[in-house]
Structure formats: structure tokens, C-alpha cells
Image 1 (cartoon, helix red, strand yellow):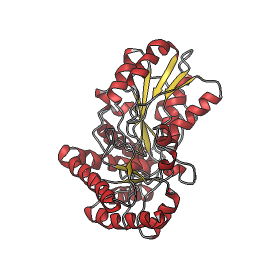
Image 2 (cartoon, rainbow, N blue to C red):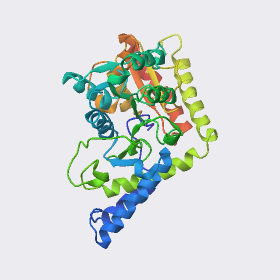
Image 3 (cartoon, rainbow, N blue to C red):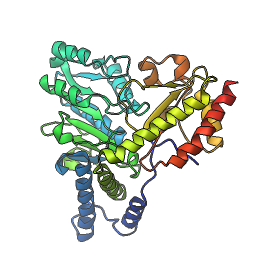
Image 4 (tube, helix red, strand yellow):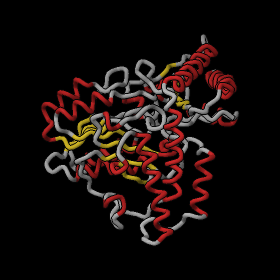
Length: 385
């Protein structure tokens, strides 16, 4: 049964499951306790912090552990703006994950100034427009937030250039790196990034664990108070099993990424082969659009649009045949509305309504692709009749 929904979540590695089970059964003490068992749990948490820090290229002390990407993004945005004084402005994009986009809309609804970035036709941020905004309004802006890799299209934004512009104008920069960490090289120490959020379950770790990189000198107002954990930046008893599992997954991802292009190039080729196979099979019968195909994309994602068809019907039929995919972010899958991310890119509504996201993991096999393509194309042809 081809599972092609890895941007929603990935299967935890066996080593992750084993380590978490051991924590639940043996290392169950509170890591904030000062007795021996508590210190043992604390040691495992700090070991995991070091493992994750190596994966993202930062100092362990700059890594705040939390429940996942949504909490981390909320803390980055709300926490920085609360400490920014008169610089209350937020700059972000309609192409963001709802963890950022919805938060920005709430900031705006409560009177906070929000500047929505424009994009080029490819889906990439218009850097000239961003620079102009920073030149004219930089002293009013507390934070710029742009996701690194789009969760629906795989488009890779020019984070290095965005960070450089923000640094030049003294503005904090947060990137939602949920779809990037563990899937491409990430070295936060070499970038002008002040905050980066991510989640373990996107790189074969558990749900309920994630992190926020907080650069030197960045001040945050805690959004969860009580207990003083994470250096008073995020209260609550640490989820030791999930954190340990995240550390194991991070170590495995780092080892895989050490292979460099030799490990990633075949995955790019596999995605391209998948797209070509779907297009070839439907040639002359159903139009196929590759959403985001004109921009740099990560190997994980293929967003295909089938104009004038309904994604919901196709997904249900594919699922019945054993192919798992989605119409966009899993947290928005109950909506019958077209993806706001695709609409913000300028994708026509009739294409957005019929767009399906197929997403891959590093362990997706050629056999899964070969099994999936005939099912996908048969479903599309049937519904198109």
C-alpha cells in the first residue's frame, strides 16, 4: 500500500520506538527532580538536545524543546513581538502553514500591523518588495516570518537572502523549517536566522516533540508559564520519551545527510520519474499541472493539479485502492475549500480544487511508485469521464 503522505507525518524508526518504550518503562522519573532517577532522565533529555542541535547546526543551549512545530512557531511569533516594544509589525506570507498564517491573522485582528509579502509567479518571495518594505518600514517591524520549504508544494524559499536582508535592517527573522529539517542540510549557525521551528515527526521521530532554535540575543516572552523549564522560556514537565525519540531520529537523519548529494539526487530523480509517469499515462485525456514546478523544490513533494476535478473524490478513491495522499496540510484536510497556499500562488481555482499532494520519504521505494502510478491515473481517468 503506497504511503505518499510523508509531509503529513513519517513512520517512526524502529530505533525510535524502542528507545521511547525503554523510557516509558524505565526512565520515567521527572527530569526536573534532583534525585538520581530524575538526573538520569535529565541526562537523556540533554543528550537528545545535543543530537538535535547537531542536525540543525546550532549550540545545544540555543535549542528550546517543545511539543512540535505549531507550538514552536507560535512561540517565535508571539514571544518576539511581545518583547519588541514599538516594533509591533509582523511580515509574513499567505503561503505559510496555518501555524504561522492563522497566528498572523489573529495578530492582525487584535490591531497588530501585519504586512503580507508578495510573491513572484513561481511562488518565490519577491525579494525586491521585501527589501523596499524593510527600507521604508523597518523601524516598525518586529519580526519577519517566512517558511523554508512549503509543506504543500515543496518550494524552497531563499532563506539565506531573506535573512541577510533582515540582518541588514536590524529585523528579527523566523523561518518555519518543519519541512526542511532532517530532509536537507540545515546549518543555522551559518545563516542570518534568529529563530527556526521544526517537528520530529517529519523526520521519522515521534509526534509531540519539536524544537525552536533561538539565536543569541533574541528575547522571548514565554507563552506557557510555570515550572521554569527550558531556561524559563517554556514551562511544563519535559516529555522525556518523545524528546529521546526525537534525538534518535535526529542522529539517523544526520547520518543520512552526511551522504550529501549521493543520497539526495536519487530522491529528486524518483520524484521527477513519478511526475513524468503520471503525465505520460494521462496524456491526451487529462491535463496535469505541477504546482510550483517553476521554482526550486525539495525532493519530498509533488503537488499535481487536475483541472476541473475534485480532489476529495480522487483521494477517497485512491485510498480505497491503497494509495495514501492528501489535498494539502493534514490539519486542514477536512476543508472542502481549495488550498489557500495554492490560491496565494496564483493557481487558478479550478486547478487548486483538483490538486493533490504526493509526498515522499527517504525510504520510499521504486516499487511503491510503480504500484501507485497506475492506481492514481486510473482513478483520475475514471472521475474525469
